Amino acid sequence: LLMLIGPIFHAGMLYMEGDTFIPQSSKAIVDFTSVATTFRMELFFILSGFFTMLVLEKKGTKFLKDSRFYGLFMPTLFSILIILPLINFIIYYYHSSLISFKNAIGFSHVWFIIILSVINLLIYFYPNVFYVCIRKISKLKFRYLILLILLLSSITFLIKYIIVFKFFPNY
Image 1: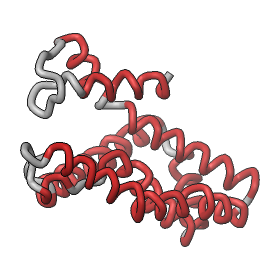
Image 2: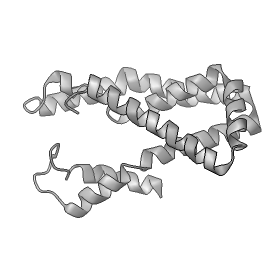
Image 3: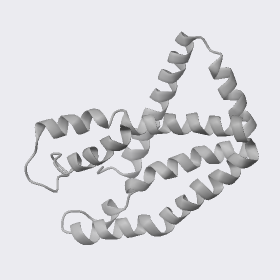
Image 4: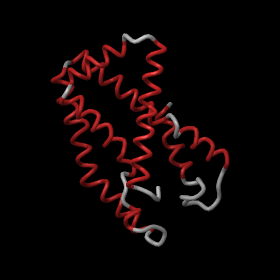
């Protein structure tokens, strides 16, 4: 279901007011896109964490490290070195009358794999710490788990907006 929301979400972004590529706007599409943006990618991160833990438990640390290296780190490196510069060039080339080159540079659709790689680098170098943390978290009472989730999500929200506003002020 989350995979099906993706194309609808990105198509809806074309109709958003402000950064629109299509002059008219649709309230239903804007509303759907606004709602979907609040949970869609976060659920992908949760699913990634779930499957990382599953792989760690079932296959072990060595398999996790090998699979993450070839399945995540190599594609991330390729994306940063090849795909991202190409996307930024295309955005600037076709929209240079609307935006400056500085504002054309961004993480675009590669941000997810970059952040996932950073998180997995921590797991890659400290798998036992990750495993112990997950075990302790899984033993928390529900109310403390909810408080922990609220605390961590608030911290990541603040970090996200501090980074966005500091490095990408026109975003």
